[in-house]
Length: 282
Image 1: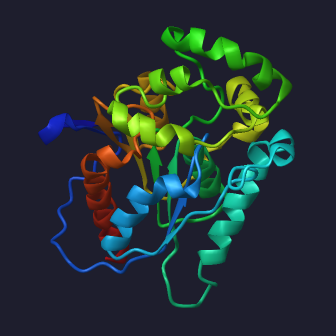
Image 2 (image 1 turned 60 degrees about the horizontal axis):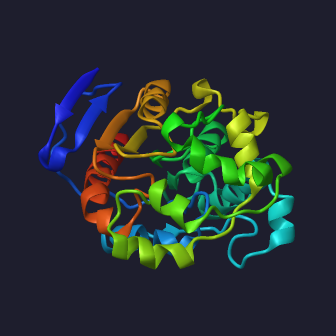
């Protein structure tokens, strides 16, 4: 394992260090499947799709069930398995047929989208997997300092009802270190989500499980140092689980995909991705 410090306090931990050096060279651009997380929708991934499109990648952002447009009845019956079906279908739609030209897609997932990405990588063969403030497989243990924020939505979670926490909770938990003006802009755009999904994540239901031995693609874990949804020890455990490099941004919240953070978070991800793709072409 190697540990690094870089500019802007970005921290690297490499659980599968590769000391080989690769000279810069052109890399063919595979399609990228971006998976949004809880309270998310594809439009909230726009800072990332803009960045990656400018770098020459084609981006695909499916909508998870019941979120965009909002549909309470769909959300009531939606669990993680239903979200995974959407993600798997979207991957297969852009995955080239065997024997035809083209690269396997790259998968990038934020929050629950990261969990869906892990499940995808266990049953398909993406070129690479990038986890942004990812939910873990198994139990998502809450942090004691936010338990009081969880209590008001606990009945909806236990009953599996659609819900969206209060503005105060969203500001103090997933958006906690973002500028106030950016929080103001994001709050009306957040989607109601499935209490059933939260119940499954909180209890570590079978739908959350992933066998790490089945994940064979390169994995990058990107974590936020001020994440109040996914504790730092959980993020480290995910990285160790897949022998992945971990990039930690100490001052950022769970909403690591925010527009104000993209210039900090996305370039190191792109550097890792293009190094990884070059190695695969050698």
